[in-house]
Amino acid sequence: MAGHMEALSKSLPPSPQMVPFYTTMVFAGAMLGGDAGGHVMLNFFTPSGDGLTTTLNPECAATLEQSLKTSLDALPHRPKPIDVFNTYTPGPESKASSTSEYFGQKYPSKTLEALGLLMVRANLLDRAMVQLFTRLSGLNAEKAEALFFSSRNNSARVGMILALLPTVNLNEEHKKEINKSLEKARSVMDQRNDLVHGEWRFNEDKMAVDLFTPTAPKPEKRHKTLTVTPQFIEALASEYRGATMMVSAACHYQMAEEDREYLGSE
Image (cartoon, rainbow, N blue to C red):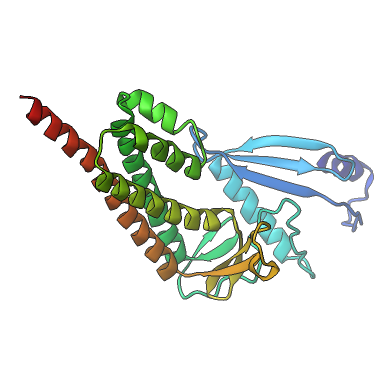
């Protein structure tokens, strides 16, 4: 477009004239993580389907953003962006008293903070389950961790540990406690999966997650909506903490049994 206008300018009289034109264009920007240092990858797609890609450093990206905003604000009818790539959270913008802006949308700050806490608690539960799997399997830590994380499915990970129970030298009471701790872990992980894999949207000052369970026996149970508040997420994080403590305690049952056998052999 710039080259076309430059060519036109050579043949235009010195007095300014309006040159009408119409075009449709799509910009797609993506923050580059890792070692990219905050650079932005910018894609420009023309109506004919041609695509151009470039990488902008943070200063250049900020200049482009401000320039584009100024140009759009100067138009008599500001065009509305169309989310052709499904990158925007649907629903009206959050009305929470405290918000944080990401990718041009404002999210409830307390909800984001609680989600960060939930991710940390989920990781701690994973570590406790790895320790339990290591103790029950008798493998060294490196091999046990490699085998445990070879599955991305939480239910399969719980199943791996449960499959070991009949093979270990533990009394039945301790096996029941381990089973109980794993069922607790499975429950909280299923609730987290609902949040991760549901369809998020804005819901006034809160967030909402729409869930679809096609295998539910009753049609009215197949669709469900969760109203996501900071309190809701914090309660789930607390449940994660409880599950982590139970799994860690189950790991100590195994250690206690081994210690008892060792002392009895002397």
